[in-house]
Image (cartoon, rainbow, N blue to C red; front, side, top):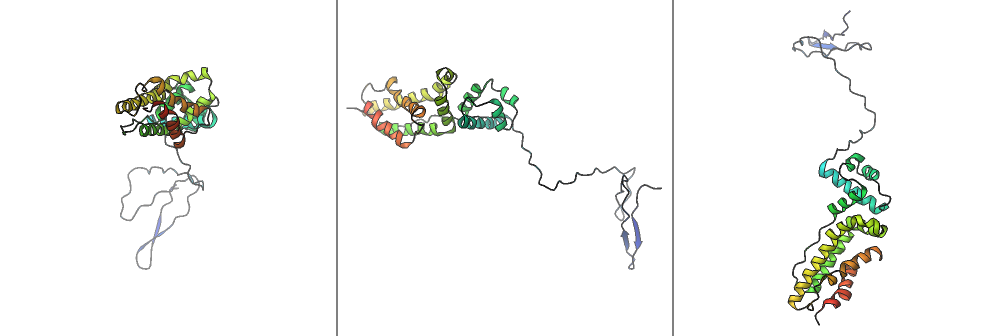
Length: 254
């Protein structure tokens, strides 16, 4: 008995060929694909057609794209800063970062040896760079713009994370971040302040001898003190108050 159920035809009243559906094939029997009129029969046995899985009735689950390189690092850095800001350094774990970034813990340890190393690199990659202040013709205007720039940095995700670190870590724990803060925050702040004071001294609106490192240390020191002790609010009002009540009385030409 032929195992293939053939398509049956009959001639209708008009003479056209009418197809009659063959009865369903028994379980386990593969139905042959019917030929169109005029088509040649394929040579050799027909290839079996694999059944597609039945739909589950719900939408297909989205498949997350696998990130690599800079895209993966950006996701890891973002997760690091978010977890650091929300939970603090003590509660930050490599496992937590990996889960938030939707990657494996091994991907983190291939790049960073510890969570402190990861935090330093996350801060370095996301902290806004200090902005150079042009000659505005007034030392006060330049200082206000510089302090506003540092206020923006302190309000950024990386700046917020730095404030959390400063508030949580003691001196011994903070040693791991000292070089980073010196290179990316303190030194640029001092250099920018010295440039402004030097220009003002040459213009005559800054007293001679005011452009010194110890004077340049005052504003960054107050910013960090405000961030660690004063609630971390470094807004425009505070920046202007710092300039008008502290810096200008120190450096203004008499």
